[in-house]
Length: 179
Image (cartoon, rainbow, N blue to C red; front, top):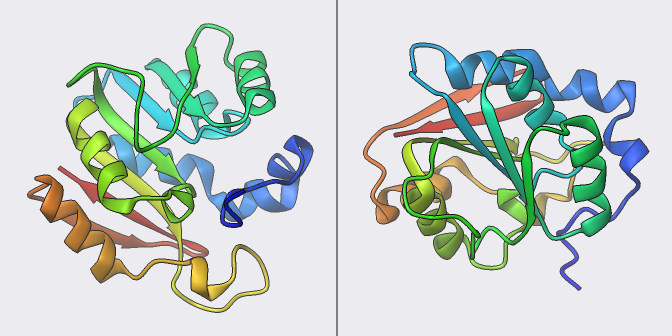
């Protein structure tokens, strides 16, 4: 089993403390501002926290995850969405299916970063947003050896074909906006 993959409870994912740390509404606002987006793929959706917020904004939402229990939870919170078993390196969707591909705190967990980035580029018609932990030792989140530096994410993104790369430092996390 990949030790970088989240293996805690669904309830813990949705704890008030964690939800505040995620800055959910701000992240979704930043993903959507000045962009024409009608559809979103939430890769590594977990319990559907971000999928639910995108759905509340009137977007068509789909999601993938490796954990069937997480997919059931996501389907419960966002019942009118398409959730499928799948990993970031082999997304079960067609080329250009989504205006936005969103990876919320999942990119550091993938087995093959370049392959996952290539897949995001393939299924994205316009944009990719990656929310990740800061590259710092902190009392929450994964250990430093599981965190990714901005320069690595940028290099991987450019190798996949993304031309635009914007970094938004948030209070607790970093949001990468690619196009």
